[in-house]
Image (cartoon, rainbow, N blue to C red; front, side):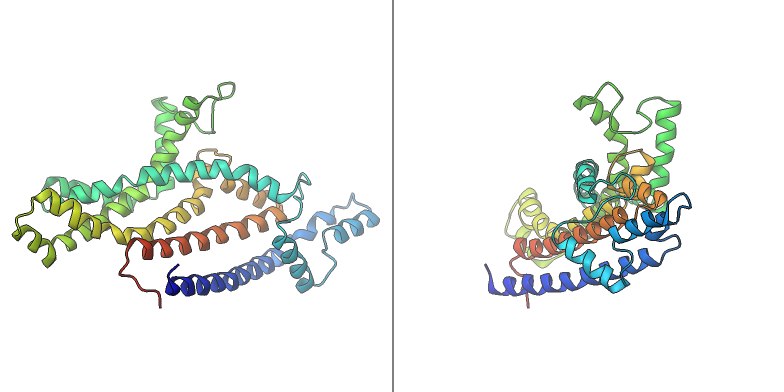
Length: 318
């Protein structure tokens, strides 16, 4: 491995560890100090004093706050996020059950959103003409409307009036087939991909216009290379390299915005789980999710930065 890259990755990993520690401290303090904190479950008047004390001791809620945090962190390092207040199941087990559903939604929307790349290229090649104007109008309108609201409107229109798509959920009860699941995914994927269509198309259009105005592109034309070779071999490759830095944040954005999408489409993923845990005051589950989401975000950004250096050898890690 490149020594510069090794030092860069090591430095980023150390920064990531400190950042994660800071995030967990903030999350832990906020959860503990929030109105109706974790100890509230023991305030049920129907519970005897002996049972209340046993429950508080079982969850470690009698210890000072710093001691509670250190114990919680030690368990998290061992992949033990504690037990849910609601059903007493291990938090990690509950999270692992929901991850496939969230990834199914996010990865599908991400891949569909990549169609924004050819859309941006198409707009750049027709600069100033009606195809370019259409793409620009689409991106402006897409940015002006909240995607969760658009999803809600599409859901009402297609499921209630037109009856084209289902009202929500992963599959129709009694019909758990691949086609039925895809039918349920079309709307969430389409709404989730909107961000990619808008963001990638604008970015790629701008990069393509910049690259096409460079001297080396004019030189390639002057040498007699045909337009297709200049476009796909010289211009397009350089225009797409910076996109590597956008893939990580895009995936993180889809996962974090999954709360709204999963609630809108009744999707049983991590976002829906977070909302349910918040309403039920299931603090161990909330802490587990509040730890895993930032971890995935930091990991995705690190991979994105490393990938950028891999696809563009001109990048130097100092």
